[in-house]
Length: 455
Image (tube, rainbow, N blue to C red; front, side, top):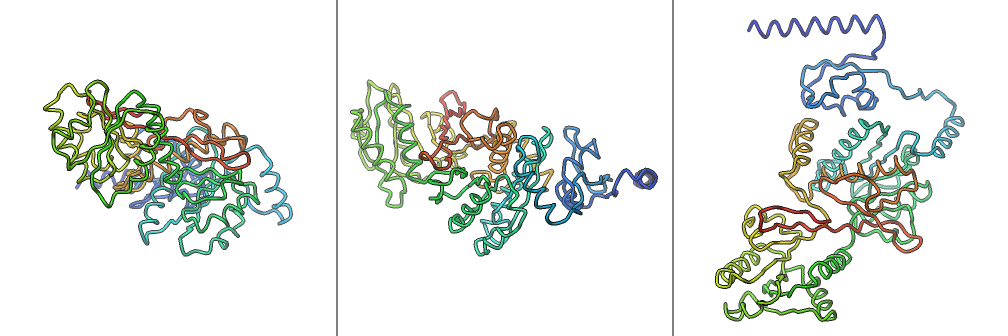
């Protein structure tokens, strides 16, 4: 009890001294006592200042491992932004001049047009993504970048034109969004009219990319991804014998991929055989080459059928230990890692994907810890991890704008940044179109019990 009283007296003394210094020097705009669940972002937002201004006024926040706690005393500085007292005509002229200033020498203005609510899964996922955006902005501010973020709740039912009428959006350098394809025509036209780059983080239906050079689309359509993966397979496994296994799964979504790959293998004259999970052990074994390394492909992504194939492969490997067997899988298999890791290692599994989160890496663990510090909860149990996606997207693109200006095209290797989860590398669509991310990675569960990520 005495200790609690002493702590209270010390706190009261420090607060009194702080208020005295404040009243005498007028250095601080206010002094804030931290409440439960408050974050650096929420405090900065409450006082209309940037997180950079807040941390500069409170240097202890920059110490590694700093954690904001209930009851902490925080100095609130005056905002460095110039007061808005000029006439409307002068304000418009000032904004136009700022728009013409090289973005490398000024504040980067980011607009976010995503469903930011707690009504359904879309809103919760995009809210988490937006939190990752804010965390990336904090990291970039620590590197000296000045960033302003204006976020809008672009729900599925909203009138997107009403949101676009907000004058803050017209001053943005880049807009992240929208999520819904139905909003794409209006947002694309708006971005083109105001010479704003449009970064599309999730939507795959954006035909405007064909003639809008300011669009950057992260995800390809399923058919485009299948074509990219098939091309990667043909390069990486050119000296292998391919074994296609029919898993008799009427609910499979992978028939189009295996048909495409089978056609390409035949056209290239590659060694290939087809078998089934219903085949006898003898006939199943005949599909495998004893002279060449074998790579096995299933025509389904689903877990029950994968378990059946593992049972047959284990039996085959026990009877014929000299066979060289590799298994080529699907992104969905990442969800089954916990239950199948030993089999993944034994059969040298390769999983193609547009993302990969290593839960054991120091970068992932550090991000998870910072997320808890900032938002007092864990990320959603989903793949991809949406907050990490938002962080990777924002860090990559805003760092690119800062280094290259409006000429940044997002090409592979243009930014010296190792993504935590989402590799990015954009290529132009046609001669006058926008840019699309073409990065496909391979996650390899090697027999040495190491997980390799191959870009």
